[in-house]
Length: 229
Length: 324
Image 1 (cartoon, rainbow over the protein chains, first blue to last red):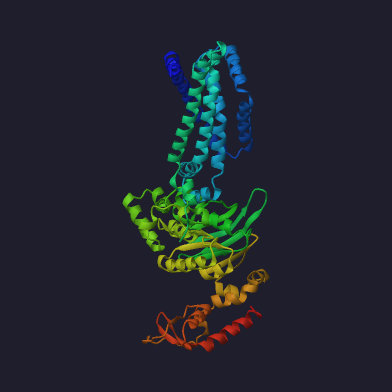
Image 2 (cartoon, helix red, strand yellow; image 1 turned 180 degrees about the horizontal axis):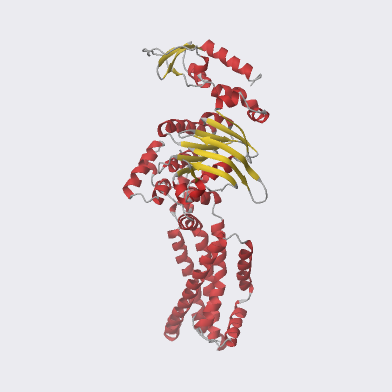
């Protein structure tokens, strides 16, 4: 009991601050990534230019294959070359956004593509404008898939964001690094446990959001309900 | 009125889906586009609301070339019903029916009233169905909603693409009958696509039989059955000829040509002159009477005896070229 108390007395305030930094960084990265990936995914799903589609999805896919530590290092070097700040939030944010793009982009693209073409055709045939088809038919029907992409992406980003401690972007990574350098278990724990809790919480919250946003008629529970005249 | 004027559609890649099609659909007529898959029937229908645009030729609605009209506005004036998947799964039944009225920005009260009216019209209790989702409905109920939705904004023209496909035979027949009854009240110009000859004979005022993008014959169901224009039509009807004759031949045609007299009180079930021979046969199955009175709009035409009906049917069988 005493150890727990002294743990919190020693690390509690920093844990809170780092968790706040971490959350802020992830939130910002996710907002930017979604702002890029959602419109881009919609565009890719609707364009007839197959080459653009495979080029963009391919490029974003390649980013994903670069190990996260290497990606962060590349960005720092790149920033150094063009005389941008190499430490702090900006390079970290860029790396996180690049990582977060793929799941959102891919799921937005697939989500819209998997909407039954005949449903889209009947919407068009009834006189909806393309933008109305998008907002009243395609997006609501692909929402669960898009939200799943955002969830996966968020959970990943929470984990990867710990690496940003390396380049002075703050966050829970700082505590972990401190623990590693000074070989102190309590710092390690103070960085790791909140990161895990954060990931689980974000996953749960986004799951709730997904359920809340998913139109009632396509929720799973309805499908299991008995049909009958 | 809808008029096709030398309309052709060639898809990129060279597939000629529709070749030089000319025909007219007068106001209030139900025209069935009949053919196998690949005959061009669906392409023909989709050209009317510009889901597909003709490569050459003109399609006129009320003397205006549809290519000169805004496609969005055009589509909102044409009802559209397709096979089972057509309902929006994420919308309630009321929302589904209200799609076009919403696009046309009807008032909330007007829409609510229309939705309830249509639900009642297709035989579904508004209170019970308004807030349900398509997955909670049976196939037949969904199909009814599809029809209601196509009629929602009271369009003068309705396009129906196999609207009763993917249903079990009993439900399908039920819906066909309901729709025929409904249609006689609402009087729309309807283009109805099907691959089923019996459905075509039942639903259509006229049938346009298509093959490989070409119109083979345009005729009333009875004419199509009795005088096929070419070998293709003959073969297409093929083994169904006998049944089709019974479906298309009316009681009137086997009655002596007499003037109607004022109807008198009669306890027996009545046949209408416009009933088909099949319907007459069904009527005899349900009664012990050996003759039934036949009425047309003006009055009583005479009695049809069971024996006379059976003789007529035997003749049909002979004309149709042998056993069913």
